[in-house]
Image (cartoon, rainbow, N blue to C red):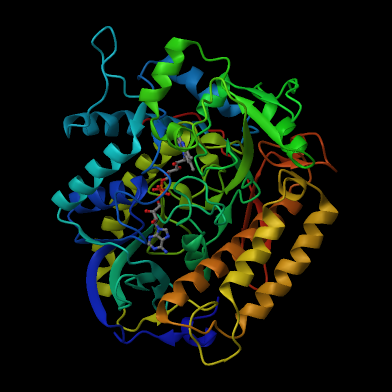
Length: 541
Ligand SMILES: Cc1cc2nc3c(=O)[nH]c(=O)nc-3n(C[C@H](O)[C@H](O)[C@H](O)COP(=O)(O)OP(=O)(O)OC[C@H]3O[C@@H](n4cnc5c(N)ncnc54)[C@H](O)[C@@H]3O)c2cc1C
């Protein structure tokens, strides 16, 4: 492995407009980041949390109602819960991790109740803790994060990680989007909780999720896993970004003549819709919801109805056009690989939590949306925060003084060959949005896309985009989306079978010999490898 000096990285000398030092730096302030911050502080660490948006309102959870994998600690009930997605996920989930997440989620939801989260009460007087309203949940998480003494820097996207001579991570630099000031934070350890990558598809809450954390981590040598499970598409009205899809369980789907599309309303119906959308518009109507369900829907997810009300469409009686928006790894399951119970990555000093990390450990290769992801975000955040605090404490005295900037592509450099972030984003989207390419994959098309994406990477890795300091944020987003698309298609190529949400038209069945995880990494030269799935049954943590 090359040292930062050998790689020719630039030294960080405190040359940012703001400088800070802390034990633990958390990048991203969604559920994973805020739980990590609270947990790190509870373990005695000083903590700074930076968010691209306003922590508490930014990211995929904040605007949504969120189902949570909250299951009472009864063995049969928990076994049943674990089994519910095990087969669909292609048997890649691991029992020990599922058990740990179920237990930690149970504990953390009790904690939320103690903190005053207003859980609704059922007819037996029991609190219903299987879902959380995003705005209330995240408002409470921000309040508790601040109460824990954590310093929050809002509107302050991280742009790159800082690394020591030995390759360990020791902080990050970024920019304040409101005033353009650059910042640098030296930290004993970093938790990457910057969410997944939804490729700027405008899915609800996702336009801040451009894979920045994956790129920053990969630049330090972090490996990823499950990137082939990255083709989640969210169903929603064609005229709105609301991709909350629960209510479509009560929908029927129709073609332009009003003829029912058979099978589209079933559990496996998304494939039928995706196929139809390739050639014609598809319409929906929530006509299977009776009046009682209709009124429950209005209270359960009020924001679902906003765009309908604005257009004076009654979704229970009127047909409306639908689309599928790419949610990428957000409701997929791939992300940074974690190599220990405390969510450490393979890079010392770097921890991963929430959608930035792989969720294969609990839901294999089938979407983490619906309840698993929320449980993973709060559990992995909790463990990563504690792990980072511990690591920081242990290494404090020995921390080397010199530190380097690990970021490269899309950051200002001396090679002046300007490129346009918007154009890179457009080209990446053209490869990853089409259902024909990404919903169902095919070897030749994957290679075809990869040849263009690889060439694009080579083009943008020499030179930097021209523009203001704030344009750098856009450039890094473009670079991160491009890197993510390449890991995703390279992993998809390596899995020559159909498993979980990864569908290959040239390998239509599941190959028992490929019941392994696909890991990947690299920037210019990508690599993939395999890792085994551990079948050990739960030991209590
Ligand atoms: C429409 C929709 C509905 C969903 N419903 C469910 C559900 O019902 N149940 C379920 O389990 N899951 C659901 N999910 C998935 C769930 O929302 C996510 O898994 C969850 O939000 C992950 O939490 P997180 O903290 O990792 O990421 P996020 O909540 O996405 O937060 C990431 C944070 O990182 C910040 N960030 C990004 N880049 C940077 C950067 N460079 N520097 C600093 N900060 C950065 C963002 O601003 C954001 O605040 C849904 C997702 C969508 C899109």
